[in-house]
Image (cartoon, rainbow, N blue to C red; front, side, top):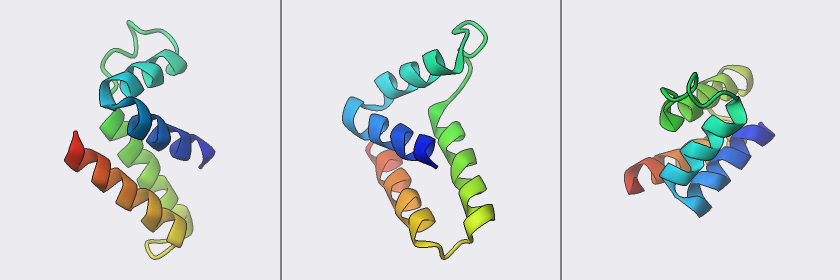
Length: 74
């Protein structure tokens, strides 16, 4: 979950395009990972947290709120 927090922070402070580029770089080969969409990657991680901790977990709700805010802005 540290990674999810870091990704959301990156997105919030750097903006979507820079955060997506950084995420692709950290995932490895840029040619191979050029198709990765940060929104989908974060949503998948959120779904994982929801599955493990539950829909009413405070940490999950906080990350989901931040994700929803960021997607509305970008």
